[in-house]
Image (tube, rainbow, N blue to C red; front, top):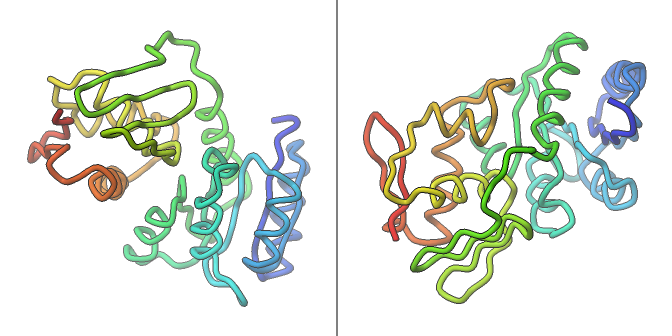
Length: 226
């Protein structure tokens, strides 16, 4: 993809050189950093469309960097992807908890990595299908244009996937949305995302708006309560 900016953050120079070379060869504009502190500074200057970062790094690790970026309004919509050799379930869950859009395991062939990144970037492109820009329930007002949720008079600016998830549930409050449908409509078919990703995002919504605002239908999916 042309004119797409990617920030690559890893403490291994060989990784930066190898992956950076392959990304540039595909037409991406690439900047690099070697730790989380440097990565934060570079992100604010470079304003990347996607940040690809390692987990274990000196000074500030990838989890901390991701969490810090998600606190900033200007990075709510930025794609953040972990590229790490740490394959434990708890590491992957911590990555999604910190606000990542995906967690990719090393080693990975450059062509496969680029295919995954292209799929994520494609999903970020505007959807031409018509949607109601404003959804109003008794306790929720959801604005698709501003990505804001007003709940009981208080405004919340949510990370993109949390917003898309609550907007989907609120689009038909009487309906139970199946997990497969949620994955397809919020994350898309082109990126393999585990079912637990939904659970992490639902937990975050419950923390913000209350556990009783959402129902888990065991073995089926979720619905919003209003």
